[in-house]
Length: 381
Image 1 (spheres, rainbow, N blue to C red):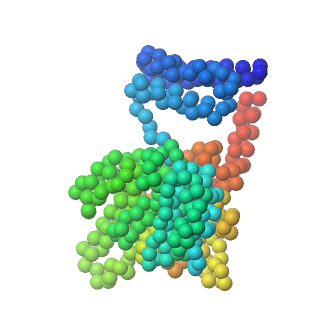
Image 2: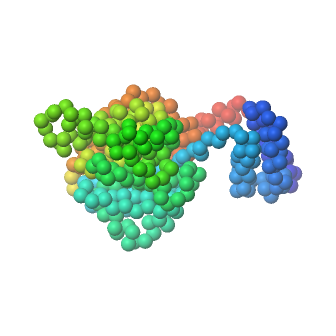
Image 3: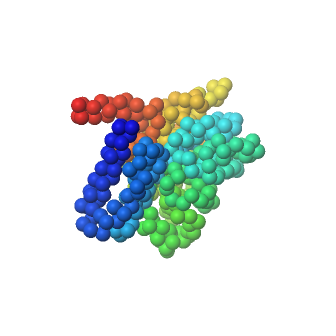
């Protein structure tokens, strides 16, 4: 009981200190008063300390104080899990399912999957955990095709509507499905551009998601690349240059987008496409295995390589900051550095977001956490 009382007093002191720090940052007596008003009596109870509500209430205290004081709020951090798999033959749905289970820690709000045989796409997405969204055999049986992408979404980002579950789709140009992990910081400007004459088709956006904005920017840049080719009076068929258009669009897009984006796409006629922002803020890893009966390499791209083990892929390397990777329909690997890259990863990927058995940017997450704890122990010893 003595330890519980001490813990309770420490929690209360930390909250008081947090209020004081915030008041110092925003010089307002009203803010300090508001913060004090939102300190619940429950926080002084020993039964509250260590409960699942303690962190929630602490965050609500800070949020309520900021709102009441008129302090601008930042959008919540988006943490999602993404995976794409290319197989030479055979259904990919079960392996996508297994991969998503290994990435479930990155998002519990919704799950989605789309598969293809390059003639047709099959899609299913909904709110819930992976095991619940894809629980029915009838759902999995419809997801045929040997190539696919899957996504799990973190609950605190954006709307809880199933409409914002990923993948997102545009039918022009080519037909593109996209999944995205990250946050764009210039979403409003990009949305205004898409709704103006600067865009080819004055695109209509169905959601408030920055991922849908990103997809439409990508599609717009592919259109521009196609138009530049046609206007160059080239004598060859534009359909023979779809891959070049996508690579060119990647270069243009990375000059326009700001923020964090690790993405995987299915682009009809081009292949499985992945790209990472020039700062490498969110992780993206490439994996490989040998196909059945020696039919060539099979590829996987995911947020973390912990998803590779259960489906027998081996880590090859990280997708580099500013790089685009394409697995063509016949299984060839094509890469291009679309923008100069400077690795500046999110530190919380190593501290909180990623699984300890993952390797991100050639750094083992468990060893990083162990060394961090060792240094902290030395500092406070």
